[in-house]
Image (cartoon, rainbow, N blue to C red; front, side, top):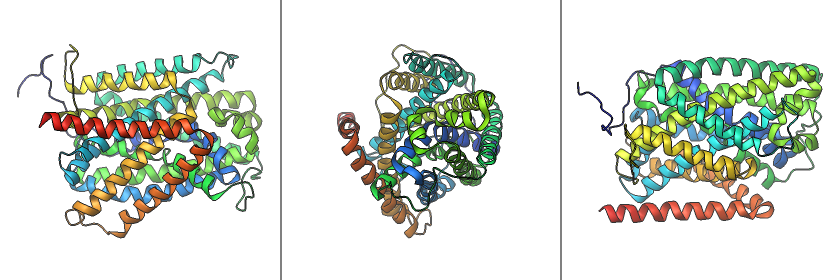
Length: 437
């Protein structure tokens, strides 16, 4: 077997280095870290008293989307994940490269979202709410820690993800059950017949809530490393989504039972910590913040692990430009550096609301491209039921349109940034492939 050296640029993937349990832990690690802690307040701001049902509606949309990824993963398990799926559908074209980059940037945006959430919740332990620069500083420190853990290797990441997933699922379940008990099962901020929520706002909230589930795609990006991938990648996706559906809905009910909508929106960046105050007192606040820290730390580590490997794969496929910048080691280590640096920049310069909206727009556009590729080019190869991805496209278009309309009315800068990002990515990819050919 050839020996790797510091000048060896080949991406290194260890087959059978991730078990089914490890894959589920990694998927739930990304989803829970990004979702319920970072997005509860953002979703409640748009959906009002319907915000718990926004998470359920997002689960329905995610379920239709997951069908295509499960079918693709069973047929083409690969460390490149979505990059490989797009290449199977569209070949080595601008569509493949640009949409793979959309997925990459949506995951990097997700990492910055979680990093800032880590900083926001950590500050709740101290009387430092007015020192706003500490939020990005703590987020950058978390990303630096994630870089160190990822350099060590897969086994540490699997063990760390499994332990952290167990701790945070247990902790957040205690929070949900305890919060519901203390509230006397009274859901003052939840209504099945709201008079303060428009259809457009609710659908915009659903688009944001989809971010709470999209972490399942990180499992596909490690398909080449999971034991028995033709079977276990799809199983890991289904199990991870199912776990998160139950947890998100229970937590949303617990938050709605202890805070008014106005209180949730006022504390939208740390809504769970705020809900712990009336429910459990100061000790409950500490408990909630500590497992929020556990969730965000493990979420960032798992996300960085998966997305840096996807970028390494599409780099090896010659779909994106690459420069070593004098760094030794494999392409995987280089893409890890690029991922961490990009996430750090976003953490420093963007707030949670804008990060969440931008990430949702990029992700949904990429998701539509995956389903269209399945329908247009792969439906006979992977034996799909055509109506499922077709429905997924319709649902994606509806929630994406609603989110754009909501942001156009409240924060046009997000729309401008999204359009500019899409144009730069597609135009840049087209120029790169043209120059290469």
